[in-house]
Amino acid sequence: MESEKLILYPLVLTLVLFLLVGAGYHSPQPGVEAGEVSCLGPDTLSQKPGMELYLYACVACHGVTGRGVPQGQLGINTPVPDFTDCDFASREPDSDWIAVTHQGGPVRGFAKEMPAFGKALSEEELQKVMTHIRTFCGDDNWPRGELNLPRPLVTEKAYPEDEAVISTSIDMENEGLVMNEVVYEHRLGARNQLEVVVPFGFRQSTAGKWGGGQLGDMAVGIKRALYHNINSGSIFSVTGEVIIPTGDRLTGFGKGTTIFEPFFSFGQILPAGSFLQIQSGMELPMLREKAKEEAFWRGVVGTSLTQRQWGRTWSPMVEILGARELEVGAVNHWDIIPQVQVTLNKRQHIMMNVGVRIPVDDAGRDTQLMVYILWDWFDGGIFEGW
Ligand code: HEC
Image 1 (cartoon, helix red, strand yellow):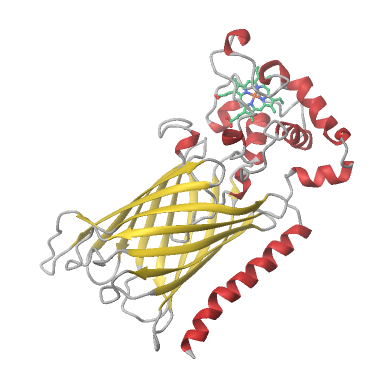
Image 2: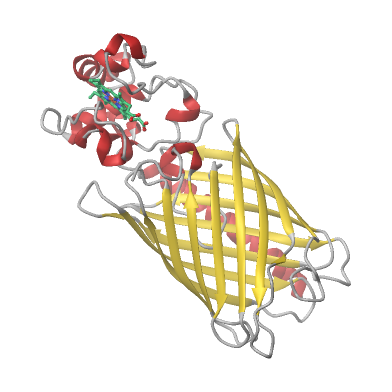
């Protein structure tokens, strides 16, 4: 009976995913090119207004092909970006590029040589220019930056990233325990990503003394985005992770066995800046006497709000975590994490998230304060763009 129930979780989740992807097709998101193309017809004329505006306002520096006029010819010190480079162009959402074009480079910590066009061109016209700029990278194998949704504290995103994250969780009730995690994510081509996780922690003894730092179980994973669609606003990835027993089992910093963790992640853009993300998978230990097999499912709903239209982005979200050991008579464990992510600098590539992880069932888990600092290192150095 119990194992039938377990099979139901992935099935129900898959069904929900298909319903959401299906629903997305009927409500294209504002700010993407699909809406415009369908209004104007499928022929090349549909590109014209955006292209004309581009030729009028941008071509002097960005060039007819979008590669950018060579630096020496412009008389400015800042190199012009190459819009034909999909690796760079695909990951920037239209909203960021419109902000830069409307307000000028400095609004996102770029050079003032990128002028402000807000007085000359309306946001609607700028959207058309973006539609033209999007034609420079002709390869839609690259998932668009709009699908790169705010990172929750626990649920793993579907978007392949170039990111470094340091996260800390602090037990707030019984014993003193501080766990940290350094996560390094490296994108490989259009759809793949390598991930390395190094956890380390500090524990307080019963006498109240804090011990030195201890290494936890490190992990290595590969993610692949199997499906992404900017028109439906959805992205779906699978990841295979191996957790290596580098931590000490006796002190509680390790499981003492290698664990395989396959999971899928799904992201869906919802109307009005909102989003939904789901992750579900299993932990399969090599030695079952050391660790139990476990299934987990996580979901998060949130929304992104921009301060004073072009400023800081705040993303309040609520995350729900479920887990259950894969054995007869095991019970489901539920945690809920209200949290807020906020961009710290103008470039918006350094972010912070703060939340409280509250156990819903009474299984002796502590309430935890959770924080991370994230650095999207592809977008610039830590000290750039403030
Ligand atoms: C006077 C030259 C000039 C003109 C005209 C110009 N740009 Fe730029 N643009 C630049 C430079 C230089 C940069 C690079 C800024 C940096 O990296 O600090 C830039 C950067 C950008 C970026 C930022 C890309 C990123 O790194 O995320 C966008 C988007 C952009 N331009 C769009 C436009 C659009 C659209 C137009 C026309 C409406 C336009 N630009 C007109 C010089 C120009």
